[in-house]
Length: 411
Image (cartoon, rainbow, N blue to C red; front, side, top):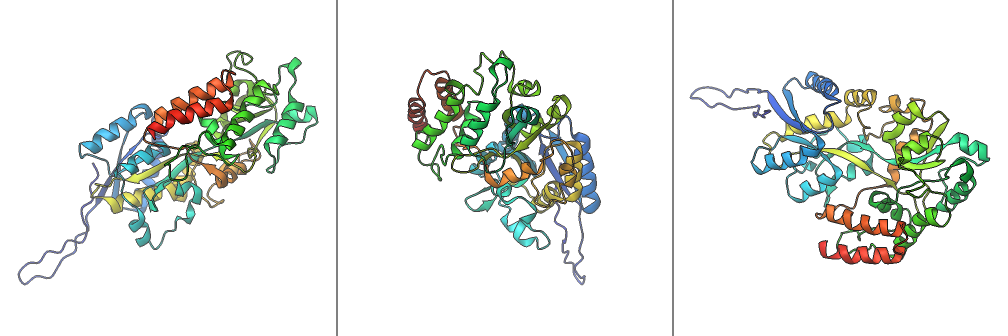
């Protein structure tokens, strides 16, 4: 257990002067992303932090992601919350709504030697609510457009550029699709996670800005879903489930059977090792605007911690120090959301894929998941309707009308 004992204790004794006593602080930290593969990197980060902050010690507890949040909630309810802990974005929203997180604003304001400009502003803003900063962004991943350069070259199609639109993508996909060879021009899954990003590329959303109204069945959203299903059922540039033959989209891409694939940057290592062709990444095409997934982990200080200053110092180091960033990048332990290119040079210098800078460019059009308290119900409802539209059981209009009607009572 890490405790903060207030340093400067004044002892007033008869005829004596006050004496300042500096006590060691201890921060208890809880994490899911370090276990089981990055414990040694966490230890190295703590060692570097403690060398720079000899008056603060860090201990930690880990839990598997599947058990982590239940365990954390139990600890908080029992009054035994760690001083600082890790949260993914979806659960951050829930914990912030419950008042479990300390407002970091006063700590940031009083820290004259530190600027939050070290973080990507979009990434940092994801961990704020109602104008208050309740967390620091620790790491992120996103989804971009992967493409098989060899297939593009063979078909005589120019590589994707940052100004591509859905129309450009479709035209290219039609030229790249080769039914006889079992090659498909394009792939993006038709499911909830892909849907909320795709509608954003058309100016749509699942809720209005303050999440008081359901906008699922808006014309922009219907148009976006129509685009998604038409690539499968009308233009045949994307395989149906049966045509995929039980293989995943990543496997088909590695086999050279998909020319363009929307998937996450977590696939870099697998594709670099196993895709026996030239490939690269680009920003995803949009219709009216760009939009990219933003999956993130942040770190927060407990609202009930007596150790908030020391906990803040630890989290600041973990998320923004050159030592911590270097350790994380070298290990492939997710990607820090820092804004200084010099900090992530080790990541950008890796040769595959060549256009790694796109990963950071995508942050400028990041879209966070539309989290509400009834999150699981929302994803289930919308997911079922998207499946019905994909299978042709409902039109996109009917599917989204039905989804909106089912979501309104749970908002």
